[in-house]
Image 1 (cartoon, rainbow, N blue to C red):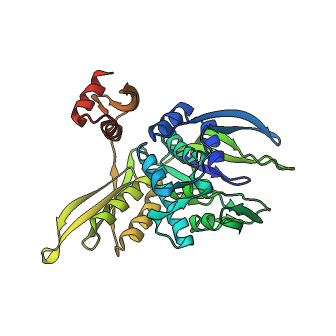
Image 2 (image 1 turned 180 degrees about the horizontal axis):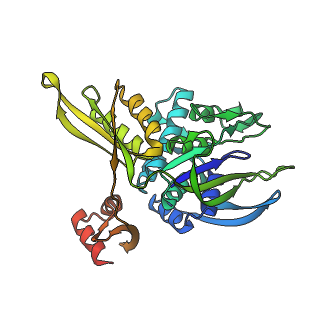
Image 3 (image 1 turned 90 degrees about the horizontal axis):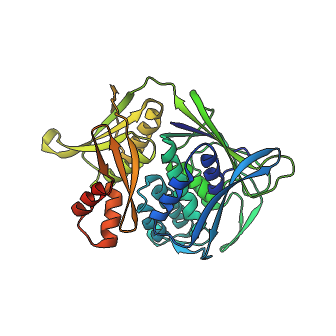
Length: 371
């Protein structure tokens, strides 16, 4: 599925989440994903509100813990438990941006305004909603920058906030009126999802959602608009990108694979190879939907430093599958069911194994027995 965003008055994490829920994402799927992070003392609701001349969906997060400061590393670790690469990538991008601005390594960044319950819920919730809608590609219209100043723990800062500007590198932007139109959370989610900026792509429009912001504007509704559609490209036709790499570390290779998956790749993997003069190497492969091939090609070349790659079109056969959920030792375990069998999600089993101390293979068997 393709998601096209129209940030009519701006984009914040709660506005994006509201728009995705209004477009059909399951709030129960969002709640389950947030619960998997281990976060406690929160409630997530959604209500229809009038903003200007429109009715839109506004998310409401109630928390028992009003702390707004946490280490970025702690938030990333919590998000990893939900098994949502977009959420991890968004938080990592925030940590990198804040670290660069304040001269602190990303691993040591302590988030102030962005360290609370609501930021983690917005980020994990949006990642879960994108997954529930089956979104593999995100497009976005130019973003309004806003203007003026904002009060933070670091004092008064210009709008857009420095972290927001760092996260929007490469985005298309336009002028805007006074106020914070795009938040760091919104900008980080766009970066993590590999958003492509410009006009709406050619697609079959299936659903539309309106997410309401909290500001009351005198002359217009304060909304982000989400449009979900199906690509008109030939079904099953995708592009394989491949490049030989003998000068990148295993850590870089793993990073590129994770980034490609977060940016909409259908799959990504590496195979060992021996190149000329007996040099050990890897061949990186990225399976890309036709509409994401150019973006993923740029990502692979930029991240690896490779001077070229190969492209060939393939026909992908994908059997239908869906997720079911079982409860085991107080934890939710997702079960992927296809025409010929069912399998528990490995990431969920890892979380459960760490929580219970039980062997992974035994938990896998118990999850199957619980169906």
